[in-house]
Length: 393
Image (cartoon, rainbow, N blue to C red; front, side, top):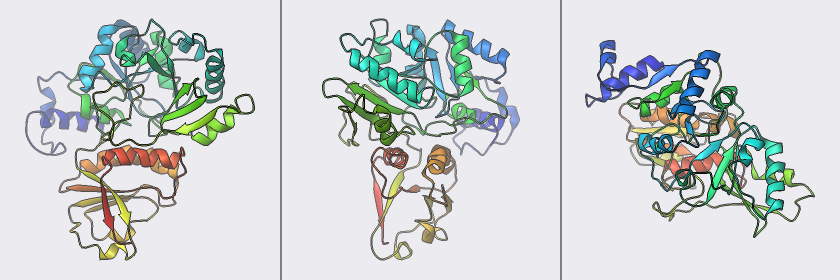
């Protein structure tokens, strides 16, 4: 759907209890509800958006991963507004986006750990600009709103040209969590942002023809732990454990890369040093389940599927195609990057379909720990809050 249709749907749905896509009149756009402002990605528009960021306004912008909701890292009121607009808990930290490692150094405090600083520069030199967030000690200039009072900050340098142009125009680092309702499916288009945050006083950048969010899931987040000499992957993403291990080389041969396991019992109220750690996250508004199989074949599964929507991978659930209400294979050829690119868009599509009561999602089998396949599986695991439905198969 076009952004205008989404905008009309939002205005209508905010006043009438019907499905958000049953829009009956464009006259609804005259609603008195405060709406977000949408701008294009021209140089002039990005200059305006940069000034808004600098002055304490919120701007939603595309990156190579997902859309971010940006605020000046040094503007306390703007930072607080992020939490308000997203309904985000204060214990969930914000990632700071920077133009390069030199800019990041102003936000970090390596103290008496020159080895960690050297490793930081090695990793950022290898993977920046790109989808890698590095967590380390924050400098005293960084607000507790950014660090969730943990003393740590995550920094990354995005590669998407709009994000980089916005950083240059703003002249300050930009804190930017995903531009959606907290816990909802991450946004990969301006229309997704409008659906979730359209009644907020924000600016949304909508490119006309340029590709956005090519990767489609959030950045890899790593923490550099000098005590144990480990690079801990806190959130899986496109920068895989294997790529990081290769980058360490002989110079950091004593450092190990470890992947934090999914923790079902994480305390929602406890301060976190990285986002994306809760069991329930990236969740559609319709209940989702992971699909698992046993020996007898999915065709023999007795449960009624006429109110189910299946998101498949490489045809694992193809036997359910004629029995469920809607079916989509995220990668017929079994390409994990293709599936990751479309998972959030597909979850938002799924929750918009009328008559659906359950979303069934196939995982990528035999995913290597820390791989892109594991990152995809992590997102759908949290989207389903770890719940599974077993089919014969």
